Image (cartoon, rainbow, N blue to C red; front, side, top):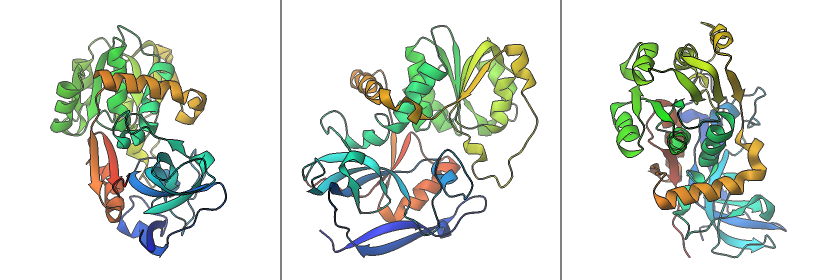
Length: 339
């Protein structure tokens, strides 16, 4: 085991879009697990859009990082040493850990990953937080059912790609917004979406929706916000359901735009708009993971991962999220299993 451990810290609070100077890579001794803790060697690190909000000082649904603190996120790792944590060396676990080669965590904060169920990286994607977010947002909040027209933004990302497939399994017509022709082809050819819209290739989102969803929108899964959501709101059918999961188009905005206001459209449609956090459904996580694993095993749900090699490149992987560089789940591969 190396004598030093690389860890990323938040070096400053970004104004607008973060850059490489937002991150500081430090080296220190490999930590030792305390009582009830395990030492975990990182295999895969997740980078997610919500982390941008944690770089701000203000209050949000995600607790902000302090300047100088280690960055944290979803990690799949291998237990190296256990000090009464309830795991054995070689066990594969997942948890919310530091952006580092090695990290310690209480055994109660770690969850075992079955390497025989699927590739361990899926514990951060389709069988992890993004998959569960798609599962509950589509089935519970958007309440999609057969015959609905379901629209999802960020459709080629980790959450949107799974949400659209779940809606399709429910019998809905599925329309996805994505940022390139390659991604639209991925939605239509690989995932079975009925229609994809390249939002970068159209300046009239409402007209694009009229073509892709001629009968209006019954359920909308919003990962992006902004002008696309403005357009969708004007195409909502009576009693439509809107699940607000993310607003990535606004995360780097120094001032949040206030117009044009689209709330009057909700009066006519009598639509329900509900924001949600996947943590709201924590008691049912096992249900979601089990069902998603069944769908993946049967081929009913497919997934794609964009993998960046090396901890040193984690900032680039994170920044690339806001340029739409990833297809499916964006991961950083840090190490290989020893066991």
